[in-house]
Image 1: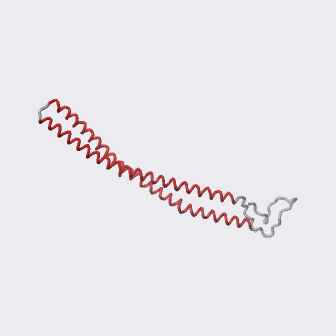
Image 2 (image 1 turned 45 degrees about the vertical axis):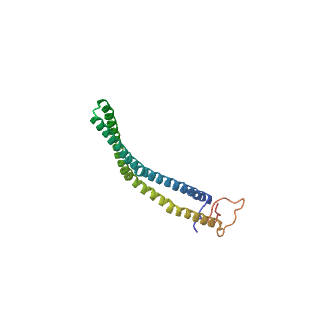
Image 3 (image 1 turned 45 degrees about the horizontal axis):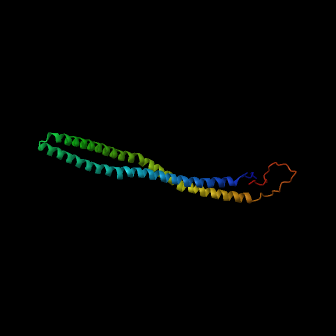
Length: 180
């Protein structure tokens, strides 16, 4: 007959299973948080910043038109001193419009880039989350079954085994009881 397995610690398997459960809980929470952060960043760029700068461009465009209208009115009225102030206001408004245009271009670029960069990462995170949810849950269940099997195995007395005597050698044989 083949030698019996020498199972020394069923508690170690159970401890590993418990630690695995804790790890899975924390890992799932971390993955969910990472996915949420990515989606929040994309939403901020696409749904918050883009409309903000589009609105800002409308406001700055109106201010530029108003400044140009004031400059035109000042030139028509032939007041040379007042046109300098209107000209500075037009230049300031033009700078603000150029700045807004550049920020809007950057936001549009970020929106495209962020989506291109984050889509593959989100896919990987979702795959990992699926692995943790499905496969690792099966692993936890399997470890629970392993513990039950080992407990049942440890409780079965070896056939023909006799309890060791105090003066007997501690040489293992086929019928030696398993240590738990």
